[in-house]
Length: 281
Length: 336
Image 1 (cartoon, rainbow over the protein chains, first blue to last red):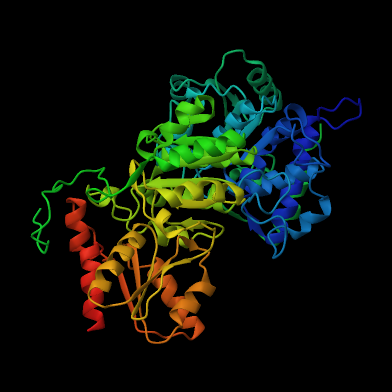
Image 2 (cartoon, rainbow over the protein chains, first blue to last red; image 1 turned 30 degrees about the vertical axis):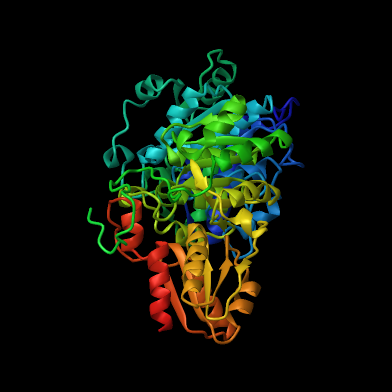
């Protein structure tokens, strides 16, 4: 287990802060990126990697690991930030983000990066792969779990609903999906693009065990992961995480068009400072 | 549907636009469900083999496998995007899925899912698809005229177009021995048996000269090899000597055999394929020959760049020039 046992081990809040910092540093390298999403999902990733998931940093392909499938490949900057914090990717590689020959391309791909289990980018792929992997783990009688993260915008894709039906049909209780409801898509607020509410009712009607939490409240996220892991019914588990774009950096939280952020060179230091300031008691 | 241009001797034959129609000619030797039986045979020795389908088990002969190994069979429902995503997931966990549907649904509906989750990730998934090219009279919804072009264009993907039951039986273990994604066209039901009489062995990536001749070289794949062999026989009655080079592996091409045979002087080169003339074997061979500086007189037999009609298969094969009669007639015309 990756769960810290030492008294002086970093808290989940510190992990989340470090993930945000890593993401901002990578964003600064390129001067742009899906940084607001990385900031909104950092708390969920901190809980996934440092509370829930079993993995071995030195052996990212360890057969007993819990698998994490990043369906929304444009969140790669967030997952790299978590993989660096987890020690799966060396911190020095952060400076290579998005450059030629880097293992950290802007969109997450299985063939590039240790710890990246799938090639995303084209939205709507992850949950289908997750169904296959969950079936495969059951075939192998493995106790490993599949975690998969996808965005609320992906709910627009029909393939997501094929997989949602399938996971329930096959009673995939080893599958925990997290949907990031930040209500922001490329063209505007997700709920204005293609309405998906009432999401909890819908997913429950589709046969899932569903919890909805504030995805930026670490205690609530921990509670949701714990409940998802111990739930007794033979159902797939969904955590609907409502998050705030740009979370942790107030002036980015305020920025209106924050699907793909351009940050002025001087603002990265301001963002990092804001992050540190927010971390003070 | 009118049967214009048919020889008057023809028996009464199918004249409806059925979805499923046998491609076996009247009285032709056939074998039932060669894919299904070969997969069962393979699965006896390879425990990693699993079968998956999207509501077309019976129509891809996968039901044979399902009966033999019910706990290794995944019915995914009529959801092709899910089918191939999940196949990628099972392959990621070390299994070797044989995923079946119709060629139109794999190539057109699920293309991105195969491209990204199977080909890009280089997963060991074998995709076997019925109704390839023009083997359904049901209309464009079920006619996969462009499947080879689409899968040829996909990096990492091996592409195979078998001729008959004898070949399909050998392809199944051969692609299992190859690690990586494969698209194979599937003939199902009562499948013609032709190549056993040619002492033929399928070899991955290899073309085979089934018949030699001095006037015309027919380079063909899939059921067009069967037609080419029949046409070659008919041509010999008219003292035209035809060679037939069977190219079951469309990608990677057996460039050496094709260059060698097409480079022999004095022969018309005809590529015959059950596929649109755009982007299939014909254009692959043409490009190879151009690149290689081999410049024979070159002709293509294939489906036109248009939405094909609904109708009975024999009618359509005549209309679009891929029946034995039409292949024979065209070659004679070109040689005139």
